[in-house]
Length: 350
Image (cartoon, rainbow, N blue to C red; front, side):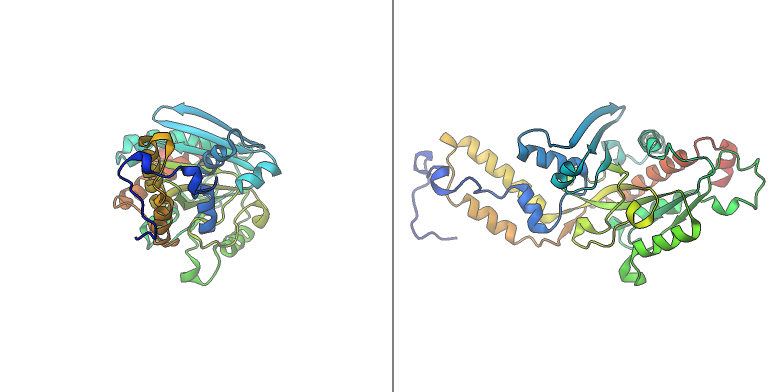
């Protein structure tokens, strides 16, 4: 990089003042970066933190509560009205985010502990259901692509029981809810939108509720394999990776839809932005009067422009992450759907 009017930058006194070189929006804030990428954070907690910082306080029409449950922290974001929905760019509803580094531990005891935590958070979303109400569990994603295989892996571990009704004595099915489970695949393999397949299943099976599981895109690499989101607003498949498909929600299906997601990828451009942002903060803290080399912003822009908006990054441990998360979610969903299930029946079934 060359400059037409180079200046000496060997001492802070020679650095041009920040406001003399740039206006108030000299840096690309993260919200603008998301807009350039054509999306917003899929995790409501990330969107809340991002927008709260830029609003300089609480977001109108949105509430946040935080609690701790053993090895996990639980953050509940509630979008209360249309104003909050417009700011957050998400539907009105409740979004529960469970954060725990224990998801990275491959141990059945840890899995059981985390499954209990997820069950405790998931159960209120199903509180209105009767024991005889059927629930359809849908695993979205491509089972041949590990970062996108969460949904199909969960469905493989789900205890489907709908077919037992009418074929097994009622006393054997005591405490067991009728449950159906499907993996609709992806549009590129089936030629059919997932939302269309799910709607067909809903019309045939006539469940009282749909639980849909899908992999999400994170805004921060630290969220991968550590975070579970549960919400009652359905899901917009592919939205986080710039491949939005038809919505799967109460409006399109006519029944309540609970969405459960785990971040498995993050955009390379967001990672680059975070690294450069930290560099910028560290640099300005070291310089007197918050002065900055006048080429810093251009350098950030140049580096970010070389990161393809479609480039997604996932960690090398993604196989373990998918295995752990799918095990925890399958256990939690099963416990939630069959809270009074006979232990002997469950053992024989699995």
